[in-house]
Length: 540
Image (tube, rainbow, N blue to C red; front, side):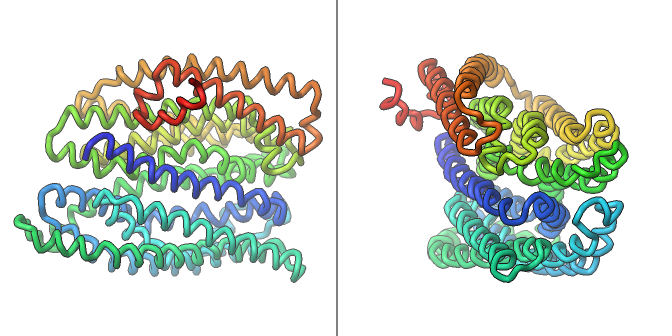
């Protein structure tokens, strides 16, 4: 697979994932207006253990299938990839049912670990247990759905994953907003009930995604059958060998998939207790929702690029590594890192200077002095999340996936050891610092392993990074000056409309300055290729 094809697949997945994440951020705006801060915290409490069990139930198989299929397709053995898919599908149905039962029947016990007292806020143990049971139903179907996406990606076909991801998100959001609105405003129901049905939307969205994937399977089946008939090479692997190779591939994938949920789980078990210890239990739900739900949605926008990149580069890297194409491998790795640097760094820097207006414009100005401040600290962590996702994907592509377990475990250990003490020292932003420190440790270890394993040189990426930092610094000054000048005329800290105006104009100025500098210096052309031609009409 050529670098240009890799970029094309990456862009397709990136656009779809970005759209999905963007919709995931946008829907939270009306959702926040319906359920408020306590509802947001309760919603986040349900999703963290769900995401962990979802990763465990899939055992990393979807991405492992992608790598497995890509490997044997490159060797001309298409039948083995198909067998892997069928075995994996049966496995996913089984593990999905098991994890559903585990979460459903342990919900109350789980809930008791999350808060130290029902008096901490309006959230009770019974409320948390209820939303956990509601979201558990999605575990039945999502693992099997995910493995189908992995199979298509193994064929370097990103369309099914892209379309099904967007459809799943749209259907889920419609159900979330519709159900919560009806329960609160039509039926005069409780916030906890609305949040429960909102979490059940994960199941509804997954059903819609399965229908899309079934359509693509019927459409691609003749092509797959044609490849099977033309196949001349067959390794005829026994089931035992397939299972062993799948486990070797899968375990590191699940560990990497657990990264963010595990960091959030540490917060979930320690944040309320630490905030109570420093006398701030009255604002714990405000900060927790700002960090782990509403703020996290915002920082996921730049991180989305890494999500699409990691899914798209694994088959390409696997093929280059299998064929011992060192030049192609080096080019693909550098390209992956450079795309992250060029697009994520300026986004993170912009988020720092615009944190208060970004949070206020999206979620309202209530408690903006608390929420905007903590988001400014959280912004730079987005770059670390992106680098971890991509570096872990690269390790998996070069058969060093087991090291991802070591790096994540090291980072998680840092989070566990320092989280409560950081919160005691720095307040709520200590949880953000703990996450940043943990992810930073994991990233450094991953990059070190890449260099040690294949003698990879970071010099091309480092040169790009220096230029990006210079352009981002200029952009920062432009954005800060725009915000300052507008603030002289518009009281954006008290009037929501003014907040939206300041955010929009500041983003436009920052984007224009950064893109103009990057385009004129040919930086964008070097990293993104011909896809920058559209900017000629703007900057000519």
